[in-house]
Every structure is written in C-alpha cells, then in structure tokens.
Length: 350
Image 1: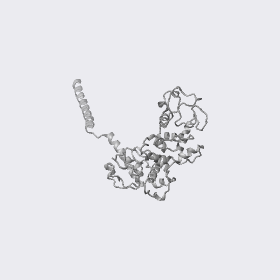
Image 2: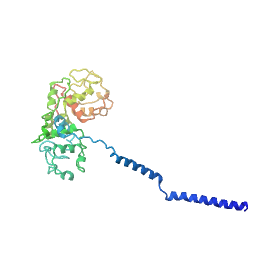
Image 3: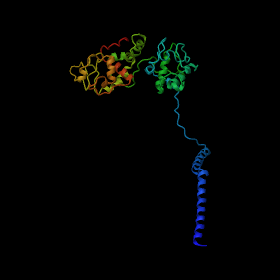
Image 4: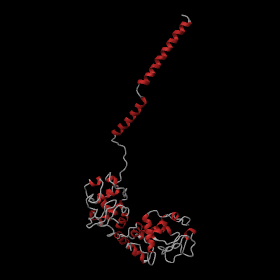
C-alpha cells in the first residue's frame, strides 16, 4: 500500500469520527434533558420538602391587633370628637331635622338602621347592607369606608387614628334624642361638647378668654342655626378651641408679644389685633408693603395672611411660612379674638 492510499484511508476514518461526535452533540442540544433548569427545580423542591418535613411555613407579615371600640369609648374626649366632625361638615349636617348634603344628615345616626333616610339617594352597596350603625360598625366604616362597603360613594378616606375615631363616635352619640349607653358602661371624660382645658399649666389670660373658651360650642350651634351664618371661615373660628389656639400661637412668641401694652419685637405687639387697622402702631418699623396696605385685620384678612404671609403680602418682612392646617388657623384667630377688652363679634353669629 503506497502512502497516498494510506492517507485516503486515514482521512476517511477521521472524517467518520468527527461526524459521529458532531451528530451526538447536536442530538443532545435538540432532544436532550434541560440539565440546568431541572437542577434549579430540584433544588427548589428540596427546599419545600425540607420546610414541609419540619412543619415550617414562610413568615407572614404581623397583623395589627384591633383596639376594641368599647375600650376607646371609655375615655372619649367629646370636645375632640366635635373637632373631628369638622372633617365631615362639607358633606353632612348634624342638627335635628337638618337637610341632606352630599351625604345624609347624621343626627341620631348611632344605633339607627343603615341607609335609614328615605330622602337620600344611597349607593346600592349601602342600601343593601340592612344592618344597624352600632358603635363597632361605625368604627369599622369610619376607619376605611371603601374597605367596609366596597363600591359605595363615600369619598372620605377615613380616620385611622383610633382615639380620634372613638372621640368622634362618642360625640355623634350625643347628637341624638336618645343617646345609646356606651359599651360596658363606659363614661366619657366630658359630658357635653365644648373646649377641654389642657392638663399642663398655661399662662393666665384675660377673663374674656375663659368665657370665650367655654362658649365655643354654643357659638357653633348658633352659627349652624342661623341662615346668615353660612360663612365657613367664621363657623370654624366660632367652633375653634381657644386653648388650642393659645398652644399653636407659641410658634409666634419669638417675634410677637400678646399682652396688653406689651413691647414690640421683630414683629408688633398683637393685643387687640382683630379689627385693628393694618400697620397702625406708630413706633413700629413696618415693611413698605405692609405700610401700603389699607383696611383692617378682619377675620378673613387674618385668615389669608396667617395661612400664607408671603403670598398674601408680597414684599412683607414676615419670615413665618404660615399655618396651612385650617383647624390650627381657626384656633389661633379664635384665641387672638379674646385678646381684647371688647372682643370683636363674629358677623352673623353673635
């Protein structure tokens, strides 16, 4: 056999081996088991099996324990409950025989049938509930209206704070011809709506301030009863807590004094400021923008200025950014109103 013949035979054998090896690899790719994926599935299976063998389950997120409404009602603060109802006033009335608004009148709601009013167009969800507004059901509903009755028309997101919600429900219970007995004979701290004095000692104020604090609830009822008292700002000021206003006003004491005859500081003394002419203290160095202002510090002007001083009076020297919370704003103005020997009346209310 010559060398040429040998080379031909060797090349053929080599080609055959290469073809056999290549076809095997190609077959594994096309038809062979998916080794990597199976290995992952097997490992996962081992993990689950191990958990099952030991009785283990994945840890669940802790669930907050609901506070019983009876325990919350036992220490209810009716003054705060009345304050919380301000969040509802844009849609509901609360006086006996009051009209429906965007939501139904709520006088006597505690213990009443759900969807009780024949004159209000309830959503189908609420109309079909067929239950009673017990303390417990009201608490669940006010916590999250959409979760309690999915699909209802209530746009309010709810009151998640347990104490505020309980205070509101206890106060709603007083707005009835026949208030229900509180669960487990719980007695609220306040027997009637009104302003609650803070536990901490506070500075002495004129006697007019104490009288105004006690009369806040009465002023609110009068405002609701008169057709002319439909100004929401005046109603909020009439309903506000003088004590809360005094507390909020501590933010202002670095720049202002509030006592009669008090000295001017960075800002002017604010005794008798309500209805006082703007920029009327002769010895105080007002900004040019403030000096150019005309008129008086009426309730409405105080409201817009204290809410956002820079927007209300561009160019003024007031560094305070303002009170954006309406309840704080109303309370401060209600307290400032008392800083006078003759507090200015609330138009249409007094």
